[in-house]
Length: 321
Image 1 (tube, helix red, strand yellow):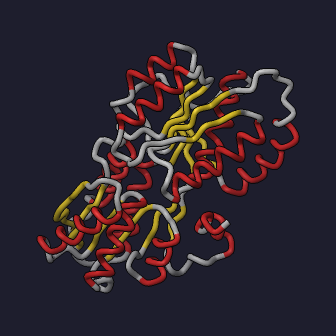
Image 2 (cartoon, helix red, strand yellow; image 1 turned 30 degrees about the vertical axis):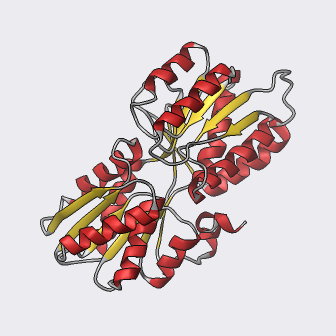
Image 3 (cartoon, helix red, strand yellow; image 1 turned 180 degrees about the horizontal axis):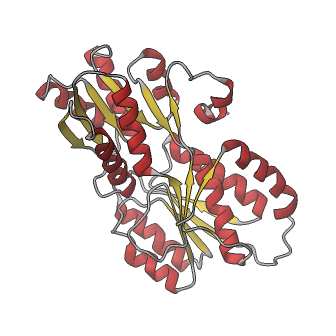
């Protein structure tokens, strides 16, 4: 399987080139691409939307961007898939809430000639044209290596994950465990799954720490669980006692890096996911270029030392535009 790594610089260059070559398409049909994120309110999915909008302008396609109210509501997500099918969308781009619950509808879409591309979180249905996103297993391994590097002695770890049936949640935890359990002086003390809500993730983290006072390291796997862990560390005032590796960046989690409530952030590239999904959909619709089955976007490990390095600014602070 060919895996394609995309750097921010390369993506920016490609976008500039495409302005002149892609907007002036001679096609008389304006493609309609329905983009269905898990939900649209997080910093992560707002950046996905920014990438979608940029590519939609450059490729002269019509897009919609609508998700559920929360990242557990697969029923609403399925309703949005049905709506896209009924609207005769040319392509559907989806970040799946559940890796299995939308498979029948996506299969129906493909049978009706609709291109399906998954981003961020995929599905088990094998008829999708492409998946675009972080290499989640490897990013889990990266989180494990970062956590191990912060503590030479015994690691007593608490895991805070999100929706247990979401593919990227499953893959990140799997990669983390594969890597961290290579070390003899590591124990997984507890593991909890919460809804993607910072307040509930904070409550679950505080309870986990209260029940297991030997925990000296915590890993969290998405934006909301990361915020929840950071809030709990702040409230408990134990940032000097517990190492934290977390995922995703927004203004609050960057503040937690600055304050020491989070030690490492695994920062993804949601803009690239959105942009590339539209680009790939157009390629597949026009049969101009072949697309790979998986296209991986890069991640950046952020800590207090490299937070303000010039080359990291657009990656770390996209929400300041």
